[in-house]
Length: 255
Image (cartoon, rainbow, N blue to C red; front, side, top):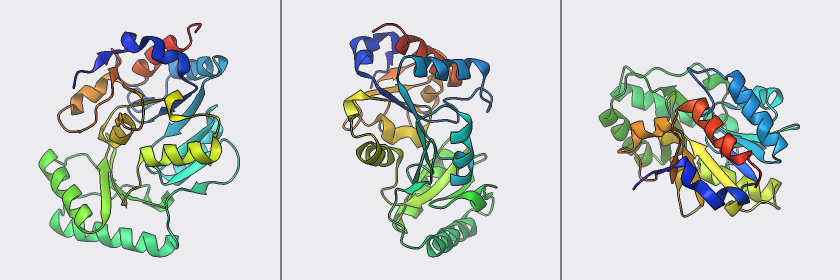
């Protein structure tokens, strides 16, 4: 698949009413927010385009983040929960008992660690509800593929980002979360008005052309072009937050 330059977006920009964006590697530069990013988010507001964060980060992390950024809401744990700008969260995955669910996730990770003793549990699991994470650093593509297969055999799904690996309920994904939130929270916005943007395999479902008609990857997505099935339609010139700012510059022009 050929990734088109961002400038080829053309008329597709005129329909965009909501940007669904990954966070780490997409809104960050060297793992930090930048002054330019905050300015870009303000420009989206001025253009009356809503920003929905869609991240693999934990419930606790996202609960705090939504208060500090002027966003319309945030999806945490790869489609597991939705946090509006204000108010209580909504569980998106069907999990009858969170306590039992956490025990099952812990057991799955323990079994993986028996096979891969070098796995390092992420420090944020205490703040998670729907998934279980461990560090991606030091894992080869062969190991990541084998872990994904093992998780699927146990009835879980698996994904990874530039930061973490995630064991999560089957069917829980960023795309599923976005669709559910649109139906329940934004009935006036349809999928044709949503532009998705991301940077890693963790964002692959947001690039699925059968669901989203306009998808963008910041330049660092090129590092994974042989590792994921769905690539974005368009790619920015620059990586991370700088690439996101490129997109906002186009969206902010009079339409």
